[in-house]
Image 1 (cartoon, rainbow, N blue to C red):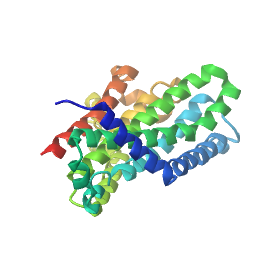
Image 2 (cartoon, one colour):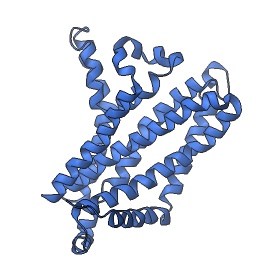
Image 3 (spheres, rainbow, N blue to C red):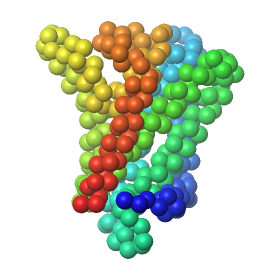
Image 4 (cartoon, rainbow, N blue to C red):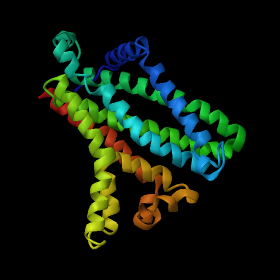
Length: 273
């Protein structure tokens, strides 16, 4: 099937401009900036210290913020991308244009992805400046990896949101599914695994349990960031449950790409049926 890149970029540009026009990007960037600065400065207050304690503890503190906030923002951003157009009656008009359904879907996704990525990068930019002044480039290297992986986590949940938007019959169902997905991946998944581990007294799971974590992009993100930081790895207990094979950042990065491309491919297949 031929794919007209110009058509895709035109649709992506329109979607991105719409988000800029309603100041969505500014609002999300402001939220990230405020929360990340507060966590960076006051994260070590319980230990009697104000300000960045170390680059490792700063990243570990921000990981928790990202896991709760980025998936929710991505799901809320993309849940009505297709079903919203269908309810407004504008989807038929778009499909009447000389574009394919795949081009329409990719244009929507790329426009939303650009808005989400820009707001995420802008939100963490001020913290990067502060960390550079205190820890120089050596510390900033880890932080840039953290920001990149945060953007990838957002893209993974945006792919899931687009899949929900294609599958749902109306915006109400799509929003309900998006919230349920957020609860499932961010709150319930880890709780179930921990419950299984405790209830069985450690008899079930073992090393295989660590690989089950790959089924959750939020856990994948946590392993990707925390496992690479020697100073904080033990705080999360990851050293005892995550095998060394999962410490490879390239393997974790490839798995995260799978979470981006997999739901997007399913959405494309379902949108054509």
